Image (cartoon, rainbow, N blue to C red; front, side, top):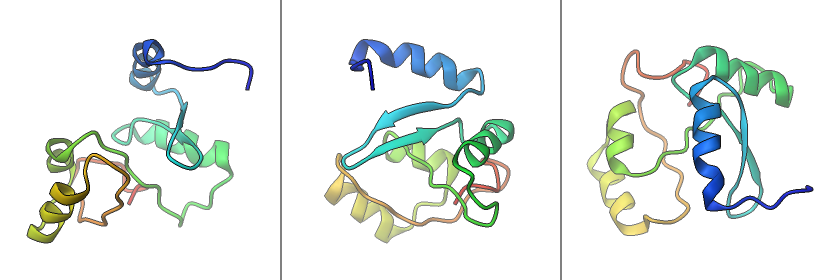
Length: 106
């Protein structure tokens, strides 16, 4: 990678996501390739870029519990886990609220 990215790059990445483009971002262990999970075309671009089979759903990365509530049903157990482990890396599998996300994401 030829450029180090900084917090000041976030507005540019956010604008790219709003345009339906892909962005790469660091996680705790690897770089992720992301798109707006509400944009079916953008989600398709992730599958194409990764060569990912269409029957292998993508994860959705969220900022906080309020954002989770916009897209999924938060169970009492999930709420306890979020309270105990956030901020920090945590994966929870929840049911998507109808019509909120592309069906190609988990």
